[in-house]
Length: 130
Image: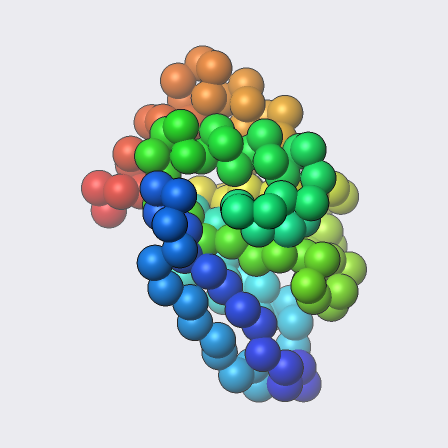
């Protein structure tokens, strides 16, 4: 059983609007699946939107901000268990990982391509209207 606290921040238009910690009494894979399903837009990234710790995370956050997306994030550098386990949950080996509506849409390059084509904004608007 996994019984540590995971921190998730909600990020909206360049401002942290709330933070919540949840006591976790489940295994880490279950917790990750719960986070993915309970957040409309979620990015697992290195660092924070204010201080990304890699260029790919910075690029991805910038794209989400340009789309005026309200998103949650988890800093994988602050939690080794998340960083080690998430690739087996998502079947994606690298970070960042962006989930929209509970589905992995990809990492930095795919998010940038979706943004350029206009598809990312459509995905974001779809989860806003739900």
